[in-house]
Image (cartoon, rainbow, N blue to C red; front, side, top):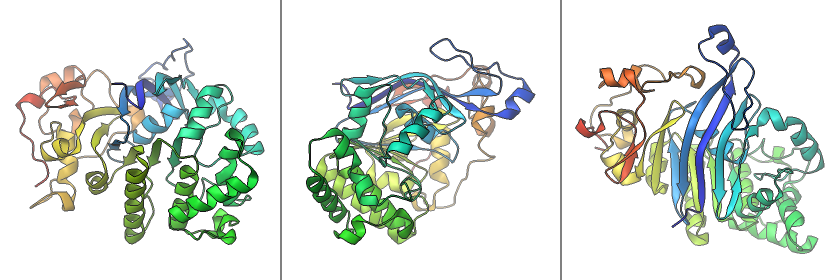
Length: 372
């Protein structure tokens, strides 16, 4: 059965001025045959993942492991200094090839944003079919819920722009739909809230308002990139409970990026563990957390007090920058306690194992600790 949302072979490059100085890698070539200028490095060498109807997939890993690039790059939503080299994104029957990225589209994006800004949606003028799918069936929650809004425009009209663009609803009907969404996320269903500016909102209120903007279009898929980042513990817990409740009542699927394993344990069905721009393990949350197959996964679990009984066992060393991840060997070899000659000689592929998948040469012989 085909997945609701699927990413295949996504390749992403990032700009690293020091790469030109090191001179250790040739600049990558994208799927159109264009070689990028010196200084560009392939950071995501071809990842694949997907989510079924109503399912939640979490992408987890340390900061700067490539989680957000993997998620946002699938929609062509990359910042300056990053671009897609290749890959295919599918939502139901609509296919999108996001080759290019932040640098290619900056001028077009500036012109588009000057005309209108739709919080949490993609309006890619070069692919109207994909733009319509994303604008009407995919909702977004970003790390910074305040900066995601245009500060000089009221949040209510911004939240309703997608309905104005893609439906025949009247202004009054759109306003009513936005009001209902505000109430659904436990914000005041008032004209004052509808007419508020993002700078008047706390971070928690801003994230609720962003969730309301996503819900206005009744999405089938929610994309959440560190949605609890920067929130107080109590606010974070309330937002998480709200997302869980709305997801259940509306039957939405979700792809969540987070470094918080406790959140994953509460909300996700499956988890993909990301390190060095690769997915090193994937499977049902209970299986991955209970009996991890990759040393990195076990190390992450052993570093979290709420998931580990007894003494913590943090991962030695520090994560290597994406621009300097070695090729032709295991990306985790320098920090792994189980490294062997084969780990230094070839990069392990992601292969099916025990109901999930793992990229580790020694996975079959290791018995790694999980949740205590």
